[in-house]
Length: 573
Image 1 (cartoon, rainbow, N blue to C red):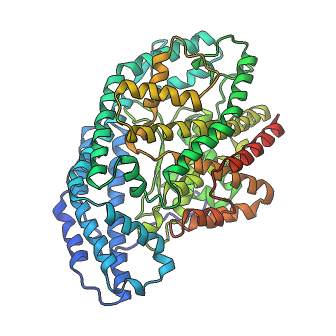
Image 2 (tube, rainbow, N blue to C red):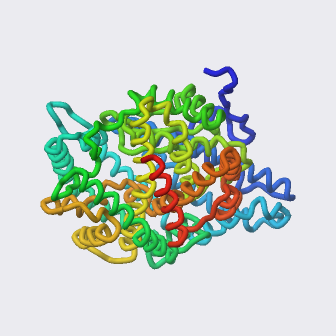
């Protein structure tokens, strides 16, 4: 460890007992009762009340976070699963009505107008919206929904295939789709799809149940559909559903033609008459898949070095997480799929979870989650927990920008200049390639929750959307059902509905930040840092402005950023 790195410690608690063990609702109910019944006689007492409530939130959220993290690391461990589901069934439902009452107490407090309006404006508008959509009858439905959402990870974690006598997780199997031998790729692809077909009905049934639950929650709260409810619940004050449709159109109009040109060039170079789903990952020059690291430790060490070169503080953040064992990076049996950074609001040092298998995609995931982590570090000293909880349009700006900013020092992963160029080219192409998939998933969700439909109609709608926004070059003949259930692999649809278009908005913002970095260097990095330090104390557009960019997804702006990426790609060639 570098001597300048100091390991953070939890702040001394002023309201919650240091030795609190949450094994029953009765242990924490008195804390909520204290907040609910406490007299508030001045603005300073109100701020103290808010501080105590914030401390309690941080303690509870961190406790729940560890349960979620540990359960995902080992989905086969019943004890870990039981601990998480205890929280979902026994703690969350009891917290919800108190949270609502405390929100009302805050908004109705006669000293509220004595507070600094600018400081609390963003927080208070969110509180008011929460009060507006709260319904007591939805509490048990949330409990049921949260438990059901976790079933997706459990189903997906059990998926594996056998290749040459070796059992492979789906993440490891995906690597074989980069094999230069086409027949090997086809065989692996078909094995993956055959395994997915085994759970097609289970995932369809689960999704139907989730849709029904979610629509009921929305109707109880007075909304026509779950889409409209979620726009309110997620605090989307800065844009509307109509803006999302504009985003879909801008991507179809400006980005899909560029991606189609990439894919046609790939097909031509590969020399295939029929370009198939198993041909999209292989290197067109016949080169082996990029291998930037071996194992989780090397991935961590190289990321620290890469980040330190960009900004010493960035590297120190990951080094602290390494020392505190706040990293679990490698794919293994029984581990739920996906990757995430989970904020831990009390200690202020987040956790990164991944399923790394040594691929270039894993490098990108690591620097992406590392961007989230740095955001968490930069906002850890904000006064209230609520200030640190940023909407995803801001959170994903931090992470997706880091994917591009860190490229400057990817030579720590690649000593070979040609491999470095390949990695950078792949990243820039994917910065655009991801946008149509994001638009497709978001457009699909809008349709799902605003249209009554059957499972079969859902398949047909997905194909229709994918024909507009998906890969225009793939020949799906013979793989029609694989095409129709592609959406099932998107975890967000099951576990975090409507959390997806933010990736697209943030990707545009990230490209703009990278453009600023190329033009202005350290000044752009400083602006990025200042924006992240704000947490969620300003509007989305103001935070983007602080970063030196625009919160904009109009067709002309999309075209402008796409042209910039094309210019940078030409420099690599």
